[in-house]
Amino acid sequence: MTAAEARADASPDPDGPPPARLEGLVKRYRTARGRRHTALDHFSMSVPARSIVGLLGPNGSGKTTALKALLGLVRVDSGTITAFGHELPRAQHLVAHRIGALIEGPAFTASLTGERNLRLLATLHGASESTVAEALDLVGLTRDARRAYSGYSLGMKQRLGIAAALLPSPDLLVLDEPMNGLDPEAIRDLRPLLTHLRDDRGMTILVSSHILAEVELVSDHVTIVRHGRVISEGRLSRLVEGTTDHVVLRLPGPESLRDTARAVLARRGIPVAAADGASDPTELRAATGEGVPAVLRILAEHDIYPEEVHRRSASLEDAYIRAIRAADAERDGPHDAE
Image (cartoon, rainbow, N blue to C red; front, top):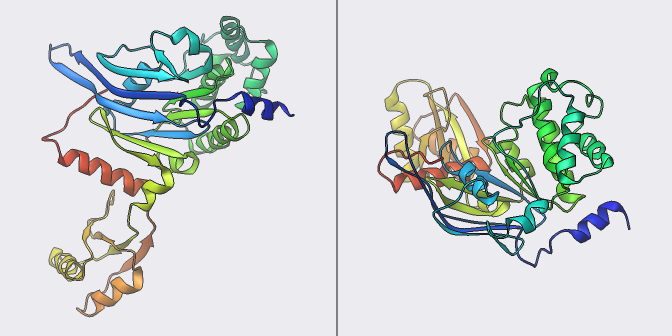
């Protein structure tokens, strides 16, 4: 049996209790002005074993608060938290060694080398020197291990933070915005690391992020959070299947032309809206699985000819935007909660 196989055998049973479960969490703060602020509003989610779970939501949605509650860094007002079948925080000491985390960015001693910083942390975890070397190798910092932390780039600092989270050889890895501030190359390098830890180490990874495209590339499950509560969750494939392919059109000219296009397509059962995130106000999005030819044929019948047109397949972004808009429609006005 290889080391990877032995590690997988030691990992949580997918049919047993989940690595983490949060049920009905409520957390309220008082702001500096004395106003009550709800960070978690009956927040509930479950983290399946041996999977990568993407935790998504706008700033202030409660993601970080939920992760801190799981790690025992925040005490909730009500609700229950369990990890590997143990109730937290009462049994936090029983599962602490099975959970590694990077929350709100890494913090190390600037004058020490990356390796020296990890060795000091390894002492606290009771980890060996070989574990330090392995962690550095996993995150691609072996060659820079003896450089001072002050000379690390932001991407290297994030990777060192992940290496620190791996020192206890955890079964559950919790990463809060690990891609925040990274350049595209650093983000690309992080992707195979996460999938390696899941596939070859049998690790469960809970990662919050704003970068939907990257989450879509690595995640098995997705949980979407808004206003301190979970508004959508499930296997990534199932969430994306629930969205509709759409055709993006560019119709220069007067607004009346776009109004006519909307009305013509709507009468044929194809809803049209402004393209999400489009900087060009002449872009429209037609929600249909029929494709470009069908949309063009309908418009041509009314002498409407788009300057540009392309089909865009359903994606996590579509599922995310739909869930967020539905949650916002249920509330009156914005509400920040993190």
